[in-house]
Image (tube, rainbow, N blue to C red; front, side, top):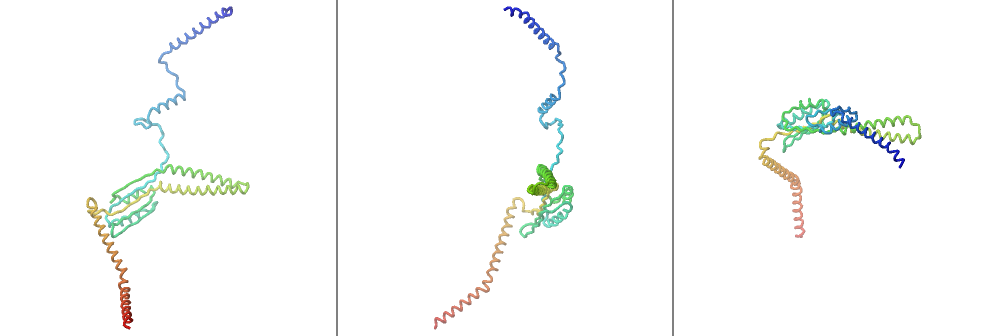
Length: 297
């Protein structure tokens, strides 16, 4: 109890000191104006604020300016064009030959055929591959006269080209390292042979991928053009009368086939009628005479 009585003045003094400090802190907060400027945010706070602001605006929203840099990576597209010409039958072959002659520099004719038949109109087809720099001149020279249909197809080959080029680069570096290792290697013969086998394997794979890259370059650096030439439909070959016209053509064709089969049968049977039948008749008559003479005796 004497000790508690001695500590009581000290505790009272400590409580008064804490109360005074608390009062001073409240006065400083009340004295601060509400419009006092806040301290400038640091780099981390500014970055977080920018990310939050971008997240609130939809990417590519109309009316919003984007600061993103445009994608400068090249695109590799395989382009194919399909043209259909409808011409008079007499003009199909000359036009087809003239278009083939236009394919000269940086151009190759992959396929060309002309079909002539007594039972169907003249038709022609041409497939060529031309480099992009000269494709415009070639197509302009071919002209638009008689074109009834034109279709363009494009296929993105960018991923295949990028993957192939990356593999080529890695394999070329590995091949060079193997060559350097083989040139400076002085170890056991088994290790040298193993290095040579690995080098041969890498070189074979490198050659195969190089061939694939050439094929991709041929597809992406040139345009494949397929042109079809057919006769202009005659009157009656289109519309409601077309089934009747086709049926009449089929009837004529069937009659001609039947007549041809009959003629072929006649030609096959003719030797029997000319040689075999008279010989058999003679042999039968001779046999009857011999039989009668034998019966009379």
